[in-house]
Each structure stands twice: as C-alpha cells, then as structure tokens.
Amino acid sequence: SDVIVFGHTHFASSYELRTEAGNKLFLNTGCWIGKDIEYNGIMCYANTFLYINESGAYIMKWRGPGNIECIEAFT
Image (cartoon, rainbow, N blue to C red; front, side, top):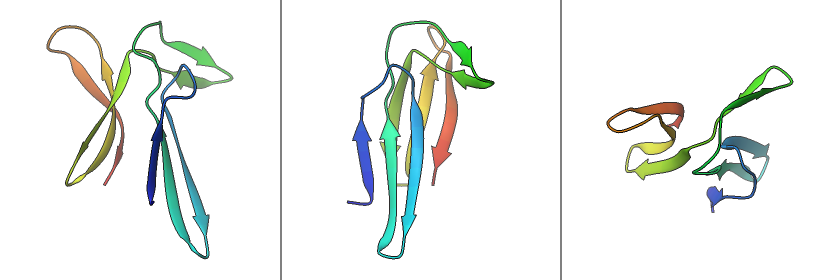
C-alpha cells in the first residue's frame, strides 16, 4: 500500500518514507477530543480527522460548527 492510515497517537501527523522500492505515506488521524498544544516549537492539533477523496488525502481540524480547517494536504 502507498498510504497507511492509523490513529496511534493523540495528535494528527504525517510521515513520508522514501525508499528505492517506492514511497509510503503514513497518516495519523489524531484524536477527536482534546486541546491544541505547542510542543518543542511544533503545533500539535486535537479535534482532527482525515478526509480522503480522488484528488488526495487531507488532515482536517474541526474548530466548531461550520468551521473546518485543512492542516495538511497530500495531493
């Protein structure tokens, strides 16, 4: 598989592994509940989910009713 989706930690994240055999994209859905924090200069978002369609995969953050933000896009 070229894309692996999991929910292993509490904050959404991505990692791309590039090898001679091909590239793999690891996407972590994060956690639906909690608060955003900054950790070692990196923003860690909570209230996140993945949106995947034919044009790509997107890590999204829910900020309240009618307010959804794209944190990262992979197209």
